[in-house]
Amino acid sequence: MPVLLDALQALLGQYHVLTGADAAPYLTDWRKLYRGSALAVVRPGSTEEVAAVVRLCARHGAPVVPQGGNTGQCGGATPDASGRAVVVLLGRLDRVREIDTANDTITVEAGCVLQAVQAAAHAAGRLFPLSLGAEGSCMIGGNLASNAGGTQVLRYGNARELALGIEVVTAEGEIWHGLRGLRKDNAGYDLRDLYIGSEGTLGIITAATLKLFPLPAAQGTALAATDSIAAAVALLARSRARAGAALTGFELMSGDALELVTRVFPRQRLPLPAGAPWYVLLETSDSDEGGDGGDGGEHARGRLERLLGEALDAGEIGDAAIAGSLAQADAFWHLRESITLALAEHGKCVKHDISVPTSRIAGFVEETGARLRERHPGARCVTFGHLGDGNLHYNVIRTAASSDAELLASADGILRFVHDSVRRHAGSISAEQGIGQARVDELVRCKDPLELALMRRVKQALDPLGIMNPGKVFG
Image (tube, rainbow, N blue to C red; front, side):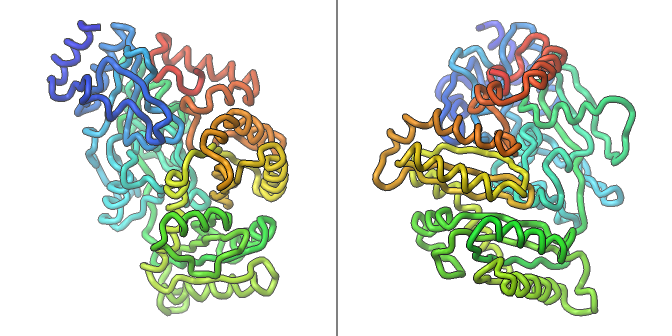
């Protein structure tokens, strides 16, 4: 399509239209599982330029693939191999447009790195609570397109719950100016929620108005060892009863997961004796200075000590360590955030991002693990996730006696087996990472046929030419 390429260069300038070797870094996903080709990779510098790019692509029938930080786990931002697509990088749309502390909102462009949004909120004396391992490189547009979750969903909700309004370039290249900072807006259909989580298949989110919250006066962080998931679920119930809305994090990690981290990264140390089957990472956030006039940090630590003392007496945990400083709390969280990197260093992995009702997680893990080991003796489960909202990252890796090639040969069967178990336990095959191209076949296999039909009707209505991120979600 030389005519389209010329038009893109005329619009953006040759420097912002990448081809050949210059485009190559943007054609492979983070996990190096998907490698595509593109007519061009373009870098628009404004919403108006994004809209003009989409209009050109629609006129020439060229697929449009939006890309932010390219940190996704499912290949959602990678073009296919046809070489017809135009990859639209959003990194130049990186302005914080407004911070409204009276309304507790921040309006940012899609190319803002999540960590930069957190920092801007903090500088204004507020908290933007979305937090995940890739926050130093992932971008707000991608967070919203995939409806990202992270470690504080328990208290603050997914990305969808944190967005009040969005600005969108439609599949026809129109601009919907939906940046409303309203917490109540019941005037018709909620179009915002259609675009959030749609993975760029309906349009391109170019900016968003997001909720802010008061900065916590103090935080408490603890790592606890427990013998079973059932005991961890009991600890979750106790923590909710004692801490209420102050409970902002509750992460479950298998002993195998943390053993892998400390083996791959020897400088990291467990603050507890190794060998427990499961570990829980708890975080509480206080909004006052101590309630009784005392120090906020001491108040948070005292509440955690009482909570964990009760849990020890009840047999829900066997040991616990409370962070005595911010550095220690960061070290606890670093253990948790290093699991994905340790898995990547170990070798190939069959990843599952699933959700199951919290009451059924123990049964799901026990049943699925036992049956999986029977069917695939060379497989080993490494499980971690956000127990508070029922989201598990259920990873299957090889044992020391098997090879990556053997695991990959069984990957499709393992994926289907785990997802079938998820369905038996009334769960979902995608909790926070989306579908991308990695889970297209499984979505079609597992989703209710009527739900799929309704989703396709929405896609046809909002993207009649079918140019927006084809091959994702629906295939």
